[in-house]
Image (cartoon, rainbow, N blue to C red; front, side):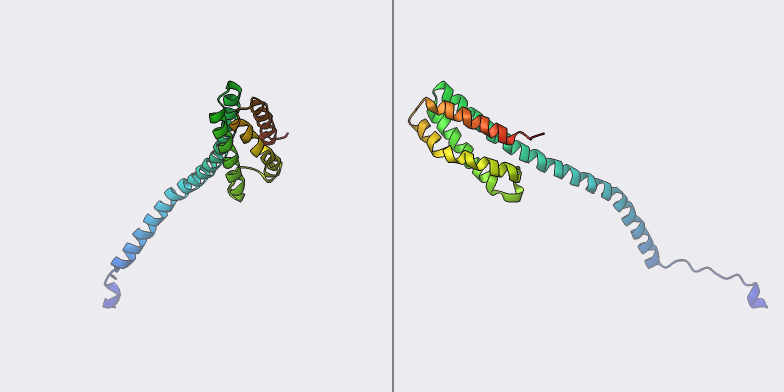
Amino acid sequence: MSEDLQPKLVKPPSLMRRILTYGGVLLLVFLIGFVPMWLKSRGYASELAIARHELSLLRLQNTLASATIDARRGDYEPARQAASNFFTSLRAEIDKGADSGLTDSQKQAIQPLFAGRDEVITLLARSDPASADRLSDLYASYGKVMTPSH
């Protein structure tokens, strides 16, 4: 009976068990803070990619507009360089495939614009005033392709 009267000593948790418990709690707190930030970051990365595609397409349009204005002013060499840059950049954008900012229908609609490339650049190289009208037509055609249809 004397054994029953002695208080039983509660063994404290082992050091390893306490370390694992604290580590688990620390990991849980870290994940509670990390997951929302990771989700937010993913959303921002997606928005950034969309903005970069739009910027790329607007730069193309700006280059073509610059060529058109230069040709109207009689500055044929800068216009020729800008027109050449436009066609080169447009081809590079199409060649990006799935990473392109262009939709498949836009890619198909843009293909006919390349047909007049050599003629426009030749007219600009010859300082022909008709090149300004050709660039204006090209700018209008590009604008129609790039404007989303409702």
